Image 1 (cartoon, rainbow, N blue to C red):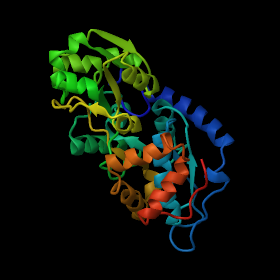
Image 2: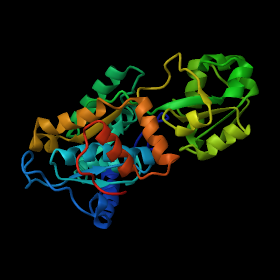
Image 3: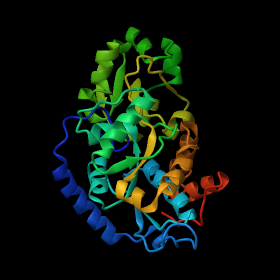
Image 4: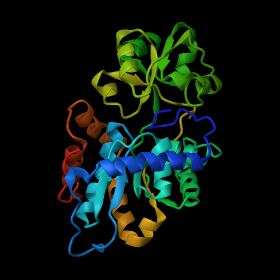
Length: 331
């Protein structure tokens, strides 16, 4: 399963074991890391109490998550909160249990995947944004966590074809594939074959059976290459993947709502929220309120295709939004 979104999880192991793994991974990471840019942000003279512990903002191990960590952290730093960023800590199986254990205090998450994880696959997300966000808030509350305002920005699974394939077979929706799926080759993560939001779900919800499935990668480079080279005809990518626009790929509309809502949402420890008061969540929500899928895709493009540091991209965008502080240095 990708750290970014869920393809439909299998039964998770008990959280106790995951917390131990998360504790070990984060303890090592914290020992090796300083604050982002090599220093902690300096609390402002007014605002949060300078004596409070530093708020560690963790990220998963892919560029968009690192970018989001800096977006939220830099905003908090600008409000005077003591913040550090711990980027690229690992997968959800390590990072979220570490959040529950208090080794980090804040993590940018995705509503659908986070809900399945924290509920141990007992509560399934839907395509309804409000319903999924509410279910996540309830599930997180039981773990001593609170969720901020979900952003409009979503990064979920996308079923993608080339422009040539879309034109040849008159494809606009996933349902349109039913006419031609048996002639086409599908490519995606190895686990896609049995997962609810990938091939298994495409069979159940859309009745799709492809000629062949080619197992590739979870984060996209091999899948994108195979799709554009014509080695596969249909692929699973992520909705904010910069290559979709750069390579003029076509995302087929999920007209039967197979994919769950995957809105970006900050998740933090309740103890941290209580310690710093409502201003902390308000600062996080101000960032989320300005994040659309189009905005996030543009920022991802600067990081992944433009090869710019996530911290620099975050700082520049926050300055344009009048949300930035002094910055947290380079990642």
